Image 1: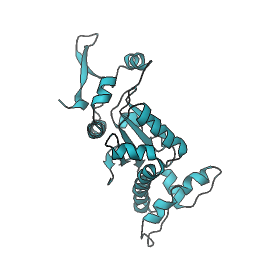
Image 2 (image 1 turned 120 degrees about the vertical axis):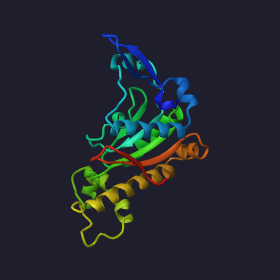
Image 3 (image 1 turned 90 degrees about the vertical axis):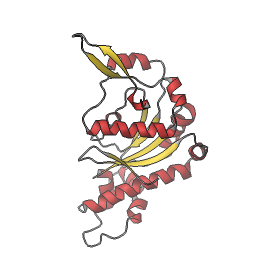
Length: 229
């Protein structure tokens, strides 16, 4: 049985057995490897796509995690409300850290949070999760300006420049293929930025203690696809 299939069985009030998700313990967090965690996350996504999420006893998980947490991964996701990160990977309370910002770009605060999540709290995977048809990416492609959002969107400019061509159909938000290529490039860029901007995280990865990966969530299907590492 794989790590991700670990469950507990309880009896319902009518006598039928129901499989409930068991949140991560300290021993499990210490024992599991970054590769195993990534496999678990991707298997969880397969359950999400198939609409077969593991049932969760919310009250029991709240009680079990009230005094401690042992998350396996930290996921930097876009702010988009259509990407419910814990559900996307079939994870329960206390299982993953989630950082959210429009365009899933890194900054000092996010990097510091990742350093806390890994070095101090024991997480072993960092995932940058972009998504198709990203509104922040569209805004950046169109050169949108709006208060503090302007500075945020400028962080996506390197990804726009990394995507070549598309002059015929336009390098703007109306060209869905172009937008999604920028989404992918932005994830790759953010992963590279995390490695270059955080010596703590870079060293942990070089030592094999953590894995830093990128992925893209498809809004139409719910499927997560890993980017080239």
